[in-house]
Image 1 (cartoon, rainbow, N blue to C red):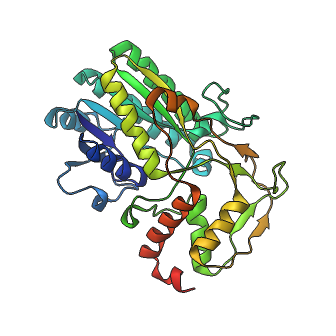
Image 2: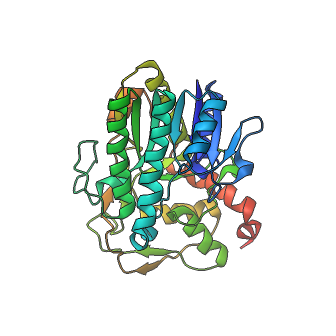
Length: 326
């Protein structure tokens, strides 16, 4: 099959492209480069620069490259920014998805994998979050992901498209240093940035009802996440009419303090974090149940948190060599 990967020049998208290629699939990258990097697109992979809001460009790309499936990762994804700019997030994430699905339906594409998020759950009061845990998103970003799932499912049923919505938990790591996360919006690169500056990383709240008082999260290596996309893509191709919604996590919780300590150990820095007040809306514990994805797709995470930190640090030092000397 030939897959169109929207957002394929981004951090996660670049890993998905490589996993699809390694599995023998054909890939075409569609990215507006608002956060993606063109150099991440592998040599020989067709690249179309454009936004999913551009129906004409989508129609042309799908037709010219013989697209038979879509992996949709392109989206705005910063929770705090979404609170400040809800109209922008709904326009980019929902209207962009609607335009893309319209192009997919018109072209007769029969497989569609949607990048969703654990943000759809909000603040679940359970030890393990299953796909049946009530969805109560707490930000416009989370709302757009949940509404996106609804739209994908409805379009799939109406137009005979096999669909999968993949609810990511906390993504970290890199398959190779040049594919590392270059942003500083997630906790691991945020801690790296503080270490590079010689400053104390911040932990928001140390009085939660958890073993060490800090929030507990489920971290997934981006290479494992990419492989989950391949498993979903192949399932849809082999089972027309499928409609899947699955968590992508390890099913193991790691506290923020444990994470910061491990980062210090891997990076060779002594770390004494600064304890800041809780952030509004941060749940004490969000850990995935990964049973359904294992049962449905035969997928299971292979990398642990140390693998994530080690690979992410190698990528960080590649861009910030001064970090290794501090």
